[in-house]
Image (tube, helix red, strand yellow):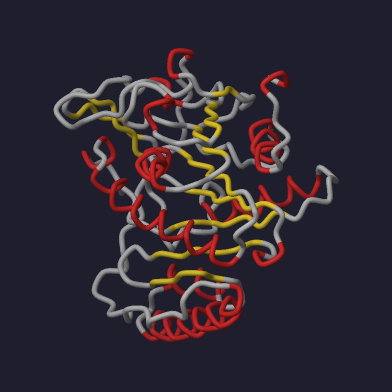
Length: 311
């Protein structure tokens, strides 16, 4: 097993849990609840972006006034970006669109796993930077396809060393919000195929959402399992992909489900029945690393150009 700085491993209820550090919420600061947004749709998309920019600026003023430097840093960066959703309370939520959603030929949604918060939204292993890296890799293929990439932090992820990382409690709540986001994307652009790119605990979120969303591709990587034993049990018509990098510690997590803990069969196992893709030799947080084999594979899937024969 390749150890990285800050990694801690514990055994709880028969499950191997790993932590790469935690990012606590901005305790004691009263950030406001989001205002009601315009309903999703092509005609209201720019209004929705503008409403969230206003909300970001208001939250930024509060962060500065209260000395919340971590939150202020990310809010300064988000102030001019295109957000479908935003909430500064607690660990925070943000759903950012990279690219032109209205005219996109295809849509890719990056769903993160544990330890993700608004404060680290742009971190090297988080959805904001991951979405931009994926968008850049797609552009680098030179196909000319217009792909909008969505960085989706729409749920409260497990934080620190917690049994919640080994149960579906937070994933079920996240799946409900993810289904709403997919509906909103379709309201803006009903024709573009959607692919869900689901990292680590985010793969559990996607699996719970799968029966109730219509997507072209469902992509699991760095997954601890997704709560079912086979791809067929997901109840989706999407192509189901699974990959794991050679240096990913997730391979040491037991593929079990017992007394509400664990997520069952490894999606990369042949008996699960997912389509494999090359994921290189990186670590658990390296799937969106620029120049990496994993990122290139994700770009090909986003473009609808990955074939099993390529593996």
